[in-house]
Image (cartoon, rainbow, N blue to C red; front, side, top):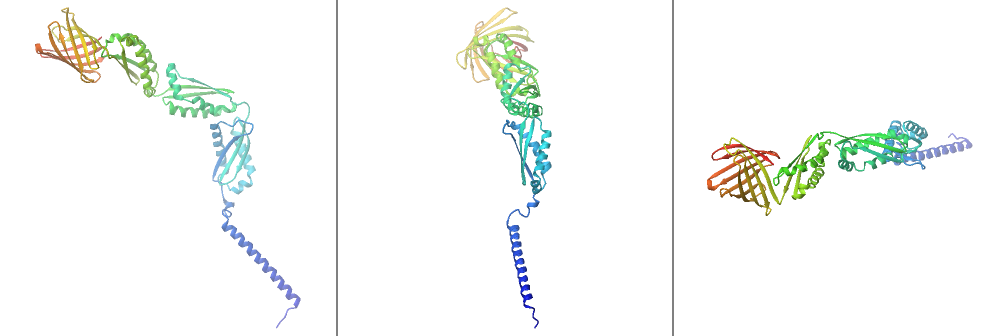
Length: 450
């Protein structure tokens, strides 16, 4: 058997033991690294993670007034655009390592496009969603007051009040955009004001568009001109009609009512339609304030048909009296082709009327006098009886309304076996046309509703 010297044998054995110990420790360290790699979340991928989203917060320095909310949002949008261009897609580790450089880059780029403010500080917090905090401070003077001047155009003060109610808190909204803003930044912030005003008008006053002029200063002046759009009211026609009093009595009230109605001229048709209740009530108040209306205790019911040529129909009636004055001109009749009739009635109840009629025939210079009574069976049907004093005979009659302008009339005299049937159409409040049928002859009649 071959034997090594004793000294060399011990030294080699010692070296082998050291190597084995080192290998054992290396294996333990490798296992630890593997355990960290496998069980600690994100460690393996940390070096490769990239920035996916950017969030921005813009604040003012401690000594400065914060930017208006809408302006701060516009600033945040600008910084977000810069941040997305510079940082999105980059590795988080790279941005963290060079954070100062990226912060300086964003501060310099944003500072070049920002007017009225200086960028004091930019702080980046790297991550998959990277947060950018920007601190700004205004330079120079800031807006301390805003004066809003509204040009309503050629509208009446009452209509201007309605428009002002529609636009609501527009002055407060403009103040939110401009007050506290550096005067030098008012020009570019004006676009924010204009967008806000147009959005508000589109929601609350869609019938008008706005022209906005902003004059910068510590007291900034905002000039707002409202311009009608869409179909415009070109003219207004007022029709006063009554079934219970002569139209002649209403003539004295027409000028004042027409004057009030003409305030609709120049307004958008859609605006008049949307505020129809207000304009209807205003016309009603104007009618009821007239002396003739008060004298006869009349009620007025206006109806507005909004259009480029707007028509206002006002039904003026009384619950106490029924007074009518009519003139007749007949064509195709052999005798008494012209006449006039006065009807004086008083309502004894909501359905019953006692009346007296006087008819005058100019050609023969003769009169017919007829007291009578009528009863309303419905809103459109009235029947009654009258007694002709001249010939001492009864006349039965019926009136039937067919819509707003059509009417059927039937009169029968039993003692003479005579019937008269008429179909009447109301052309306007002062003139009607009627065709009359009798047992012996027919004729066409023009009726003056006086």
